[in-house]
Amino acid sequence: MAEVPAIHGDCDPRFARVREEFARNFAERGDVGAAVSIVLDGAPVVDLWAGWRDAARTQPWERDTIVPCWSVGKAMSAIALLRQVDAGLVDLDAPVTRYWPEFGQAGKERIPVRMLLTHQSGLPAIAKPMAPGIHLTSWETMVHAIEEQAPWWEPGTKHGYHVNTMGFLVGEVVRRVTGRRIRDVIAEDVAGPLDAEFIVGTTPADDARTADWLAYEPQAGEDRNERRPWMAVEAGQESPRDLMRKLTYSNPAATPGGVSSRAWRAAEFPSTNGHSNARSIARIFGALARGGTASNGWRVLDGATVEAAARTYADGEDEVLGRPTRFGLGFQLTIPGIRPLGPNPGAFGHYGNGALVGFADPVAGLAFAFTCNQSGRSWRDPRNIALVDRTYECLG
Image 1 (cartoon, one colour):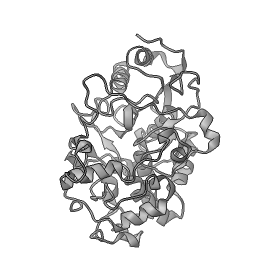
Image 2: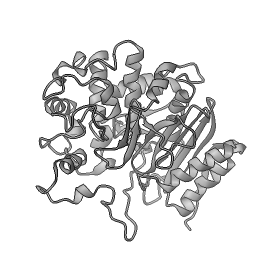
Image 3: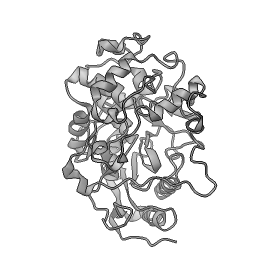
Image 4: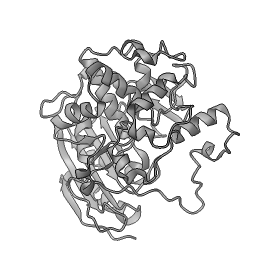
């Protein structure tokens, strides 16, 4: 059993079991640095952090520590686009070409904006070889590659997780209708008014408070490619589907230095490299759990838009992941018994690589967020499972 570091922050006595489970994550489940936050009916009831920003355990996790949040950025990107729907600048049922004419190449002329959010557009991967790291350094290059790419399936007939392309697809529509970068819309219109942070592209000044990302090491007997067997298929031997899957994750290839490099941290890579903390994510989802309006009166989204975003648009076996997924408008939806977001129907949010998660539960009026720097099992990690379970036990 590992030593439990000092736990900092606030916890309503009603949620004492969440604090106990948070400590157990360090003692029994390998946490190095982490934070958990819960907002109930617009008010913070849990805001805890503990541990270390680095593997050597020399840099303490502080109140303002930020960490890569991976695919939680997809939810933030969706919010940025849905705000343009609320403003009357975007019609979800209009073709993407109304706002982005160059998109209408290679059979994509009729794809509606809605499918960019529901992972149904058939554009999870770029087929032509891309320079390593180009997704981190050239928005325009990625956008042009998407414009030229033909869908991998007939849009609307299937869904598949757009791991790295979603942020560019959604972000370019936002840029075309607002004249602003999606990173700025997220920071200034979504997070900032809630006294929250969600940074897509950090500055060197942020490095001193940014936690290093610690890669997951498979346990004895565990196959690193268990969830992605196509990655082990020899080049040139892949089926068309497996090639698509492989390219989804590997084209463009990563740059040297990985996710703790300055290049990766600085990039505008909205579906993947946003940096934040549990407190901020819970505040944003806390507004959505209240119908879109935060306790300070800031309207993140219209109530009708929140309701529409939490409906099911894509459900079943994921063409990319090869397992069940369920999507609303940019949000992952709860799948009872498979990948739940708490016990209540109607919960929506997003998981991030290696155990991160943020979600809203309108039934309970609750938002939950967990961030960490020790990557774990991206599919049903025991740390977030335990914390979510204790949260609902405390609600009674």
